[in-house]
Length: 254
Image (cartoon, rainbow, N blue to C red):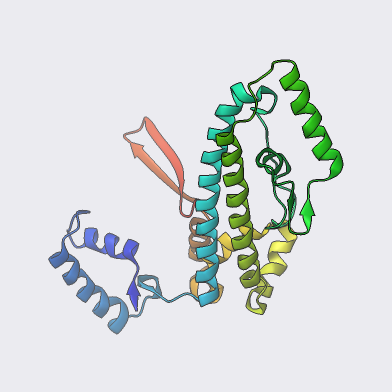
């Protein structure tokens, strides 16, 4: 059994403590919390239950995808800065993600061409697209528009493809967990909104198990808790009568 750190922090303040962490005082608060909110009058808000293993796996996959995406973006920006003088026509290339899930064997066509990976497994760049890239590059070099793609830039393009593959493989793993029968009731709702796989994953990591997290609370409190877990918990800070600021709290990803 684990205690909810937010509730413990609020309890610390309510008993005259400060927001500064103090192990002896926190230990006392934990004892008081246990007797008042578990032994005497059980309040589930103070206690965190272990999540289903599949939900923990989904969140791990999503965190990995976040990490891969961040690193891939960094390499893309570095490659683009080199293309400004090597191949200006493609210095602002935008690679849009296709609808649906990613395929580890299907590389971003432009970056695959730039590093020489024109085929990967059963996938290869369509002849028309490859011819377009070849002609565009030859024409630019003939016109003196750029120094040509260097070995370093080609290696960066290769890294971009590899990060893309890593992201796709983890996404495929996540889809395996999302498709478990225990999430069917959630997907019936997600389908109505047309959520993608990653949106579904983030929401599941915040609201599962639904019955234990929300149905045990009054409707108004359950709704506020749901909104906060989805990143829409409204807070308001007011200083005197002039300065009022509102913001949202909770899960930024969800």
